[in-house]
Amino acid sequence: MTDLKEPRTNPYASLSTAELVKHLSEDVSRLVRDEIRLATIELTRKGKRAGLGAGLFGGAGVVALYGGGALVAALIMLIAYAVPAWISAVIVGVALLIVAAVLALVGKGQVARATPPLPQEAIRNLKADVDVLKESAHR
Image 1 (cartoon, rainbow, N blue to C red):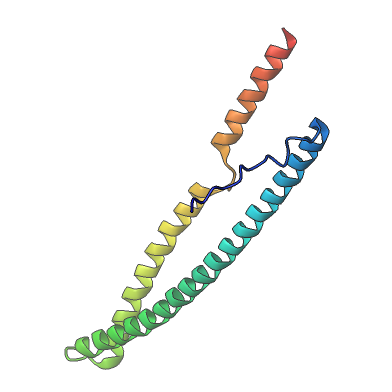
Image 2: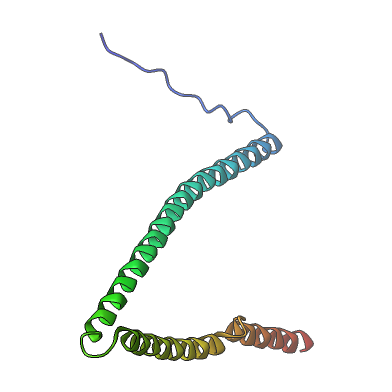
């Protein structure tokens, strides 16, 4: 027995141009809505993963802070073999404050170079484009 399939007929063949445009508009609208829904689901999923990752980074930062504190305490105890413990703590504290001051100055310089937070090159290019359009409109 041979399996002959019936030829498919085009459901849109008998429709007018206006009806075809209407169907096309509906199909495009449905496609756009579906794509937006898919993008929303994907972004939600990625946002949850990013939130989990950020939480893990925060936890790592806290653990690193405790580890740094333990190393500072060890350094204080090491120096305490040569001088009294309170002088050892003062030496380490002053050294940490100097490092913090240097980092703050470098950070301040970086922030100063980043401000104002406007895309200045893009603004210059946009103004140049507007000027060119104005000139060509006056010709």
